[in-house]
Image 1 (cartoon, protein in one colour):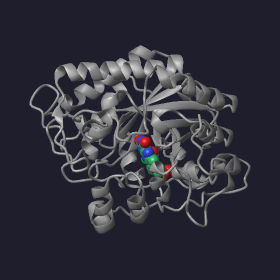
Image 2 (image 1 turned 135 degrees about the vertical axis):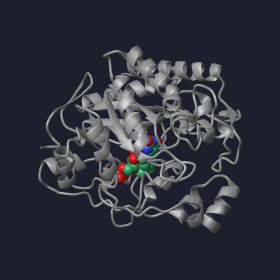
Image 3 (image 1 turned 135 degrees about the horizontal axis):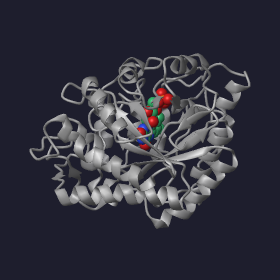
Image 4 (image 1 turned 90 degrees about the vertical axis):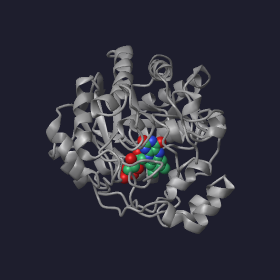
Length: 401
Ligand SMILES: Cc1cc2nc3c(=O)[nH]c(=O)nc-3n(C[C@H](O)[C@H](O)[C@H](O)COP(=O)(O)O)c2cc1C
């Protein structure tokens, strides 16, 4: 089965099965989409990827983790419209990842105490969150719906990806580690699912058939007390019933296991160099490898858990994580995965898919050095591996809109 055959994602017809994974680009200075961001996604569409995902966009100010991150609102719509126009001109489609950081939002950036499913102390921000009230949950659902409508109806996105993974707010509700509530939004999995399902149903209903709605979910949080694959399977079944168009299968929890979703090397020196907070910078220099758990890289590292989800649901699934070659992509298709998502290989080379289709290369030379991760806060993601950078992604960053 070919990764290059046309595919259907809800109401969206795509020319092939390849999706650019959400990778916070760090190209939104002051929260504004820059010319550099537009060019980044235009190049990925021109390079043959069917759907490119713009990330990360908070649905409200209190969901921000960095100062230079987007919050969905009318101010950023014209620049986002330029981005979707540029992608469409190249024959591609664009998705916007929408989320809320919940208890690991930055208090300094958000200007308020972070909101959490419960009062679990956050080791990442070193704060105890304010427990979200029922009014907060109603407001947040409305924020997700409003952001999705703006993205699709005004900014021209073809899809939205709701962030239910990586320990973001909706994932904090799903996870038994962060959700210790005693009301109808906590306790049993059915209760922990209640708020994420309200958000998903609300967005799906608001967008109807105007755009595809994907949900990025965790297969596992990646630590003992977190969500495991058995509960993740039930989450997938419930999201299917809620009418979600496709699931993007991932894992990890930013505040506990940030490299579970990436695997490979910890770029400790680069992370420390780019860290703006002095205490975290010093901590990283001194204890980097102890502070951040390591997870070795393997090709197709989410495949074993993803197979369990494939057996349990019928909706389209997006396989992600360590997919590096045409053979991996073909295997994913043969095993029943409808789409293939690539992150770091497309940061390394936006033309990868065009080159694979033309038979010029069989696999990406991307190595899991993760140096691109530390570039998020240093002028925008690009490949800085000394032997690997390509001409197209090593342009000096320029943040002019
Ligand atoms: C620089 C960088 C930034 C990332 N930012 C996000 C993000 O904003 N949202 C998200 O869901 N995942 C994010 N990820 C995780 C990717 O979506 C993807 O899950 C991960 O890179 C594994 O896929 P890969 O092996 O193809 O790179 C990021 C990854 C990288 C490398």
